[in-house]
Image 1 (cartoon, rainbow, N blue to C red):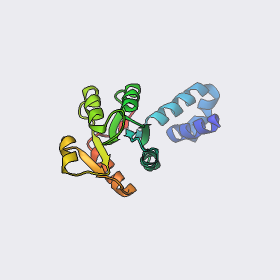
Image 2 (cartoon, one colour):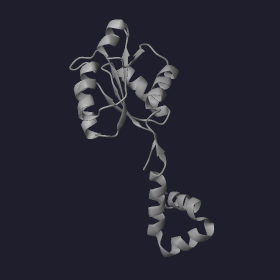
Image 3 (spheres, helix red, strand yellow):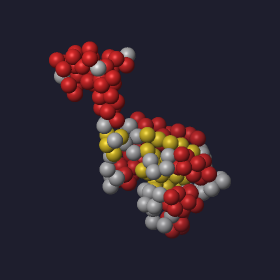
Image 4 (cartoon, rainbow, N blue to C red):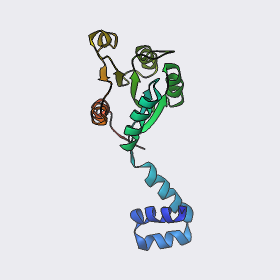
Length: 167
């Protein structure tokens, strides 16, 4: 399977005539070309989703994964901090519930902002009212329940300034 996949990728880059000669003389070069072709593909940003309600966390993660995003999840602020340390610099958006046990969303944002200033944040809450928004320091808040389309619109808006990386 690897040889077929490698050959197909190399054929795209080299053409069929050159591929046959390369496979006979240097199969390692074909593997290297396949590896480079794979890692040059655009990658959508990693998104960290934090919610103490497993069904909401799973719903958001599944909706984002279906659109090609890489999604990391955590059940509370402390877990989210641990995840962010494992993926330091690779998280491009934080989606978090406002009210959670252990550590609430606004506190989580303050902690993560120290390590990742400018990290875009989308809060989720059943009550995105004026008093919540004051506490959220003007950041975006998505009212629960919300549709997949509304979620995706907000996510695209928040990650639009960050260009998709090419490795």
